[in-house]
Amino acid sequence: MIQVNNLRKTFGCSKKTFLSRVNNKEQNTVIALDGLSFTANDGEITGILGPNGAGKTTCLRTLYGLLKADEGSATIDGINVVENPLAARARLGIFPDKFGLYERLTAYEQIDYFASIHGLQGSAKHQAIETVIEDLEMSDLAHRKTLGFSQGQRMKVTLAQALVHQPKNFVLDEPTRGLDVMSTRVLRNYLARFKEKGHCILFSSHVMQEVAALCDRVVIVANGKLAAEGTPAELCELAGETQLEEAFVKIIGSDEGVAA
Image 1 (tube, rainbow, N blue to C red):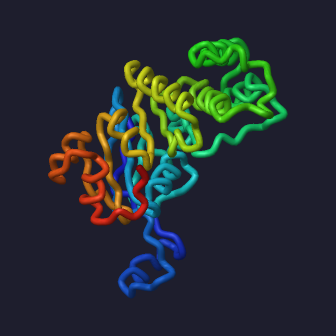
Image 2 (image 1 turned 90 degrees about the horizontal axis):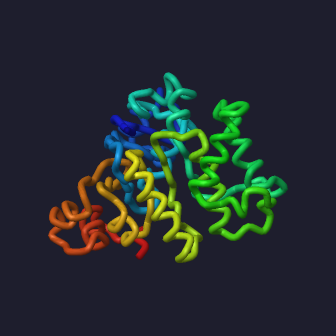
C-alpha cells in the first residue's frame, strides 16, 4: 500500500520563506504540491491523471526519495520514505519514464546490477534474476548487449530491473510513452498479472483509454491538489459524462495537457 498524506512541495524558495512568499504572491515561487493526499491499495491499479505541471511527477519523485516534501509524508507499506528510506525502497519497484540502459552491458548484467543495489547476494541473487527473466519471458534477450534493443526490449529490461527484488509496490511514470502497440499490450498484460498477485500498482499517464481500461481507481491532480478520485465510472458519474476524458476535462476545468 502506498499512502500520500498532505504533501506540500515548493520550488524557488526555502521552507522558511514559503508562507511569506505565498502570502505576498511572489512570482518566483512554484507550488508543485499543495496538500496532496491519496491512497493506492494492494491488489489494485491506481492511476494519476493531471495536466502538465499538475504535480504528478513531483509526487512520484517524493515516493522514490529523489525529492523531500516541505510538509506532509509518504509511506510504503507503512514505512516513511524520509525516516527509513532504504526499507521503503526495498518495498518499491520503480519504472521510470525513460528506459535508460548501460548499453555495453547485457540484459542479465543490467538486472544483476540492480539486484546488487537492493542488497541481493550469492545464490539468492542468482535465483531472483533467473525468476524475473522467466516471468518476463526474456530468456532470448538475457545474454545480449542492450545496445540496439528495440523500445519493447528495453521496456522488458527496465521492468526486470524494477522487479528483481520482488517488491510489493510498483510505481510507473508514463510507462507506455514511446512504445508501439504490441509492446504496450505486453506491458498492460504484465500489470494485470501483478495486480492479480496482490501488488499495489501506481502509475501516471496522459492516455485516457489506457487509464479507463486498466485502473481500478483514478486520482485526478490539478494545481498540486486532489481534484477528485474514484473509479473511472464514478468519475464519469461525478462529472455527468460518459467518457473519462470528458469527465477529466470538466473536473479540472481546462483541456490543457490532455492527450487522447
